[in-house]
Amino acid sequence: MQTNQNSLNKVAQITLFFWIMKVLATTLGEVLGDFFSMTLNLGYIISLGITVGLFVVVLAIQLRAERLHTVLYWLVIIGTTTVGTEISDLMDRTLGLGYALGSLILFAGLLLTLFLWHRKEGKIRVYPITDTGVEAFYWIAILFSNSLGTAFGDYLSDNIGLSYGVGALVTGGIIVVVVLLHYYSSINRIFLFWVAFIFTRPFGATFGDLLTKPLDKGGLNFGRGLAALITAGLLFAVMWYSSRKQPENNWGEK
Image: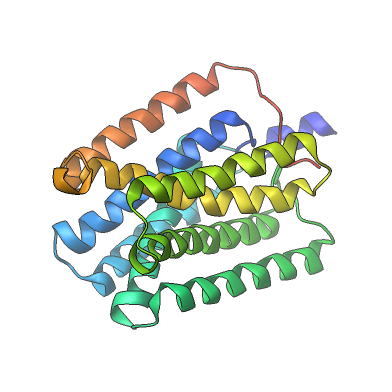
């Protein structure tokens, strides 16, 4: 039965390689979101419309798929990070809500999604997933998580005034604590998964800032197009390498 479940599974297993790819995917999403809104100067509303359209297309293909297709799965993840970037910027810069209030709204949306998911299914499991209804909850929660991670990361840099390096240390430190709790505590693994998922978003965004920001602000001053190509290359390299390795300790089965 377990073998049959795994063959029908539609989402990635939660291993070390998953988290590395998650960070790179969030970096790529951050860079692409800024590319549409800033480099192409389309504005946040038009950029959000474009990114939502692309996200809906890849998500629809993913939901119709009968099993996991790794590239498709990560395209959806990239879509959630790109849309998350646009949602965060829209709430702050267009609607004027600010990153603090925006973070609270997104956090409430995530909690509501997880509550409804648990109420309908009686549990929350992020691997394996074979049912389309459960997978819909999964992607909604991921979209809220990535949007929340974006807003919180921008809150640290824009409102509190942390530099990119310090912000990376703060979010990276939280991730390290979550990893230690995963291995050395009995705290619910699903809870730790969502905490890690949220904070890998701003951590990945700092890598995007490192690539694209001017030299006098601590960045490498790459264009957003070049930064996107570099990040995409790293992501697919890790994806290829991980496909050749045996699965590692999974966070999503307890």
